[in-house]
Image 1 (cartoon, protein in one colour):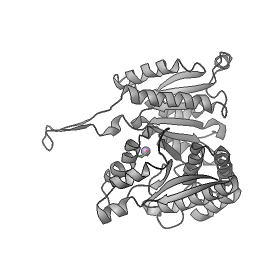
Image 2: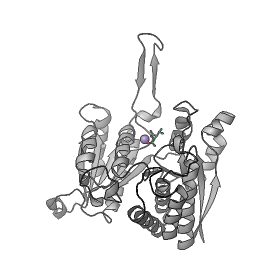
Image 3: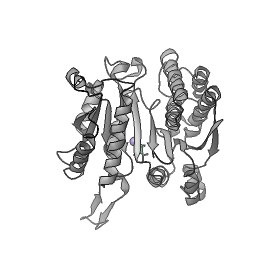
Image 4: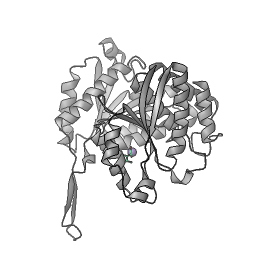
Length: 367
Ligand code: IPM
Ligand code: MN
């Protein structure tokens, strides 16, 4: 039987509660579709840091490299200064394991949960491909004259030709493949007649960030010439946020840098129904990828059994798709859609009409 070794990092706050439900659903899927998932749990997060002073020991990082996939709950602790756990655990894994893509699907499963007026599920169905190893996230920069009235803080955006190009190539490939599921999204009939089958929007700020997005734009068109079936589109990041609210149906696949991707995907999560359902994958196509619900550790809901586990379940679903268990991934997504449409009163913590574990049970029973 096909067996996958999976590292599990439940993490902080509600992380362990949602991971328990994700594993319940993954176990139901593996039993039904005939493969095996072998979990190894890792204790990382705020509690460990407060106890031992360690964020991510090198030995643990070395072990994580051996897995095809990691499932992460949440990182973040009210007792730890912001930045320590994020940089020491989450970003360190993303960078050291070269998870250079952050893939964030934005899909509305039920119009009842959309804050936008008159938008249907078919209007909100796009994917953001966020560069995940460069940009403003590298930590490049520093202070000059720190602590004086003349202090200057410099935070540099690093955009390498290699890093940008591999991200763009991933996005073009992704857009091409996605066509099978969502034909002709964002295209005009004449573009379809010309043979275009998908649309990739570069989201940037070419009018102000004239070095960074000059490189992105040139690379976008150069790589894009190899994908004549993918229509190339461009939008400034500020306009992108406007269109997410006004015309989300215009988007198919969006590619962007690390910081802009971080920002627009929180907005994306809101228009798909909130953090209760939003998941993402940190992808290294040739190494270890990590899947996570994109919301935080939600300390105020911890231990109450009210948090929505669907985002973690969807992260597990993305992991199955990544591992090549496509039928199982599709079954989990179908089960999630049915539970959202037929059962839940809300996607928000404490308002679902069911407890965290009941939602997990419902999904698992339908897989
Ligand atoms: C995310 C988060 C992280 C990010 C934080 C926790 C460092 O907001 O995954 O989007 O900024 O990437
Ligand atoms: Mn974020």
